[in-house]
Length: 426
Ligand SMILES: *Cc1c(COP(=O)(O)O)cnc(C)c1O
Ligand SMILES: [Zn+2]
Image 1 (cartoon, helix red, strand yellow):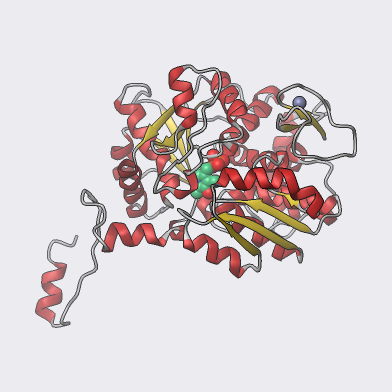
Image 2: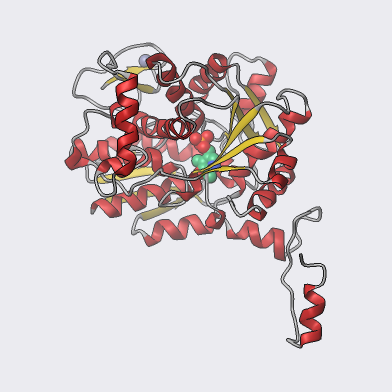
């Protein structure tokens, strides 16, 4: 495992680890895949599906050879993350999305309830392998919940920095419950990142934000799992929400591995969907700008996407270039509509995740994706991650156009009254 700067190409000296190159660029893990034999590894990965208790029972560590071959088993902290459902769309979901060949990869089914676990198990394990026992991150929610869970599970400590507004209370409560020290500050996610870049080393903290290249390695497993489930043939499109763009970066890196090593023959196109109120990456791509112009006051109800200065934009742009990908933006109303259809289908997700389906619907309507093509939407977080959003939608009537609103019913509990409620209830 080598660390190479994604901006200037400089390689870190063996045995050292920092988060950023001296030039300011992000680091990237480069593996020596010379000895990898795809056909043999496909058999190994298939055999590991029968594991129950070893590290290989994890949907991340199952692919250890492609993710972090050098980390010793004794340092690995796993909760058998990954192993999430890949669900074929019901008819209402097909109708909403606009295509029949549609699947959902429910990363919401991870142990802390979001895809952040796929990366966090690798980052925390890597930190432990270097001798760290104090971990930190800045987060709008799910990263901190995931870090807090792994640190607690490993018997280590964690400290998380959260902006004091527009974050989900559920996620903060989850993080507090796992015992993390939660530090609130007046500022944005981006301010928190800057603080950690400056002071983490002096404070003895191992930083687990998405700038940590090991998180990206772990998140590659999402596309490995999808590919393995489809017997190493991917659909035409993979659609996912974009905030800090770590997941888009990881997806692209995973695809690159699979193609280079001969696991798959054809790359799917990647669609990154941002929320209108926080869409600096989409704007850059749509305008054909050379560099990203940060948004100073981003706002979207999909709090996990509330990021104005995504650090991984260069890597994400490369993914789009390599896969013939696209970016889109969707409104909060479109996101909440899509979310209600996903919830109603029995799969369920938090607001940010639903941006994927809202984006796919737009892609098909605009004729950029064909009705006969196939697509997977990645659902990033769990339905219960943002219960305020559920209350606003179903109970408070805060969204007047809420087509799938399911209001609470009150009854005097007589047979006639309940009978009246049930009329028209198929
Ligand atoms: C983190 C997160 C995202 C955004 O992913 P990035 O890698 O930051 O682009 C989307 N949805 C949920 C639920 C998240 O937790
Ligand atoms: Zn550099």
